[in-house]
Length: 614
Image (cartoon, rainbow, N blue to C red):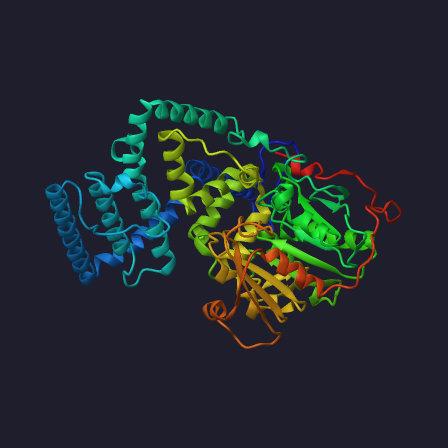
């Protein structure tokens, strides 16, 4: 359901379809009054329902209570009719209790030494400190880990529970249990107690100071402490360039060349609008933009506007036309090139794939290649973000966005933090508030704190069409009223996935290898969704795997690909530039920076004005 601002400029109301007007001969008398009452009641009921759900959503961080309750009810009802599963859980509970009792007895007899009943998962570093091996702290940690393992067994493997509901109840239960981890409390954390004794409690004093500073900054919607040391345009997003185009949705930046000649095909980069573009132009030493310019390419970057209430009706089609397609038109006009290389990151890569499929479906051949960084085209296995996405959850988010016109950046940040709550919430709280250590901010963290909003209509279409229904991969997504699919993409593709991506799992990104009707070079790099992409040459401990799948090649699953792909040390940026060089023309004279004669004068220096919007 769409909506528009009222003419008086007050609260927005949804459009309610009018009931058909029947002739007065059918219902003589008070027909008009009856219609007016019906419409008023319908409109009021619609607004009341949406406002109520929006109010609830603000208190639940956008998580639908009904969706969560339905998942737990599905689990509980199926467990209730599974006596065999109940027996196994009872047996596991007694076994774990006996193991813990035996462990406690050994520790009591030996003064703390004893073989652990259970080891933490490799990614769980809460109990790494040597103090957790001493009694009674080893008993605390073993009790917690055994309890956590039992609840995992209880929440999974119940016959008849839907896969989605199983993931939801397992995730939600894990979040609840993590709240009570002994590492989170002063009295049960040996590292915190040791530090408190050493510093006579000054660590707790510093921690309290950090806590109240964070509360104050959150209340005033300020960035985290230390972010002020990273100034956009000076420390970040500092590669020289000019804004050469602006509309109501984007500014297009063209970067100054640093080589005598450049490749004839410019590179146009489409970042996600869930983030500021300068993750790809961070500090000078790890700027992908700067690296590409130094390799002899003319680079254009889309900088998205941070939308507000007035932009609530901007949809995916607007982002495609005013963003990707407008950037392509302007870049080719300024440079005089016949084709361009196009690259997209995260959600920007998904939008770029849709736009390119539409262009190629209509015979447009102005794109020479497509590069995708941690971008999905198939959403059937889209990772833990799908925990928050079903029909109930999407309608709940829609009502929240309907009231304010956009999805606030804090709700998105909260969702991403929940996916890695141990690292991003609890471990951080222990470090900063109990140990009193404030980790210095670095450029990627400063960028991460500079969030953006997403318009109501666009985000609703994105969640419904892609996450819920997977319309693009299955050929139902429409570009200008014509269905398109990934198969319409018929240019060479360079796709990058990252090993530890919680947002776009690499096996989901990998699916373009058998969806696109073209040659696909796939790269699997070390790191996560952000750090794996910002992987400049010379960065220590970086590696990647790479292999090209020929056009019309047979199906290969992700695990087989991983076994066969070439393992390389270093940065995938170098492999990408080598791939681009082979698909580019010979170097030519540098094109103009902006082109006033063609109607695109320089509008200001990079990074522009849209990136500064809060």
